[in-house]
Image (cartoon, rainbow, N blue to C red; front, side):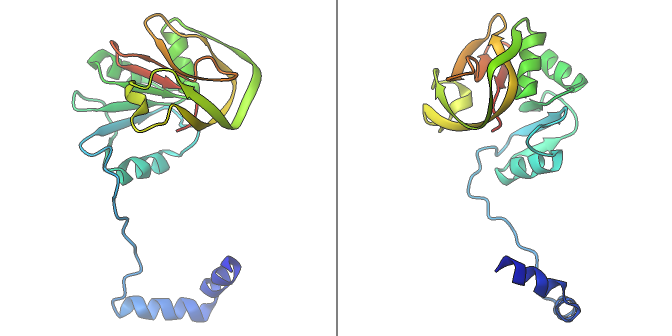
Length: 193
């Protein structure tokens, strides 16, 4: 069992054996084999507090799929991922015309800043929720079925998208599970990818 493995590694004799093996040149590090390169050639900037991942976890996921994470926005930036309390990086990305993705609270913030409405949902959604994609041709849905299960965690939601945004997905409770303004390269998802 997992408990036995943890106990084995905690024993002094096991620690000593592992150290001797390292000294003998045994490498205990594993390398991830990248099979999915969907982000190859893309550079991401993370801004604000991400609700589902730490910055390090998000960076690991992006790099796992072949992407690169940068600390600053430039014309070479492919996407800016916006979380809660996003700062100047979001504004700079919009000024440069770089696609911006708002996730969860970041989607609500984007909608509000662009003139949409955010209200308290009649029913909070938490956990796995069935989402229906209303615009399968959206860049958000590459290889995503039109009916998918997503992870929701919200009490507030976008009740009315901002001018220029179109709704591209919804749930039974959330009228704007995802929206986009293709012209301004602004995308938002209420759920946690």
